[in-house]
Image 1 (cartoon, one colour):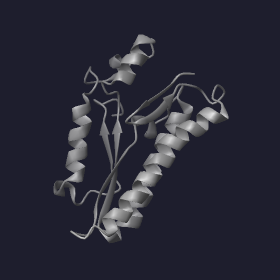
Image 2 (tube, rainbow, N blue to C red):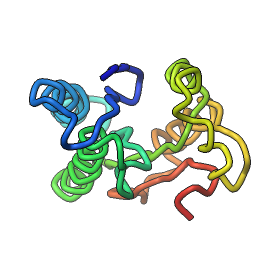
Image 3 (cartoon, one colour):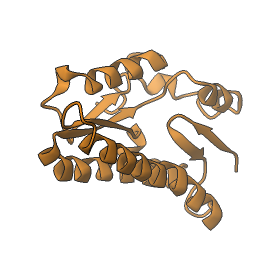
Length: 168
């Protein structure tokens, strides 16, 4: 199985029967442990930042964290974990003025998507997107900017989907 790392984590195509324990652990290590450690370090800084109390943590999950992810068992499980960590952290950290939200992208134009397309994995995916095209990375970045800003001060524990209507 081919593994690919991008800003959304590690993706290894494979069913529960095909995955080895080492592949499972590698995906969980990057996607779950990495999110945990990022949140942990961010909280330490946000609670003692001196300028003001609080802040915004934005976790990147996936639409695989909102629905089943056949053929990407470990990836889907890891993104559900990110979703759950986000909600728990939002409840724990709100007394400190820290907001925690997750972004759930669908298919984004990236080198990883280009590679999967060359392997024939995404041939029919574009047809499943009601908007008819993949998102540009800037569309996810703009949502993250909103969540990081003071324009979203009452958003916490929420899931924001950027998928062109795939999960609608």
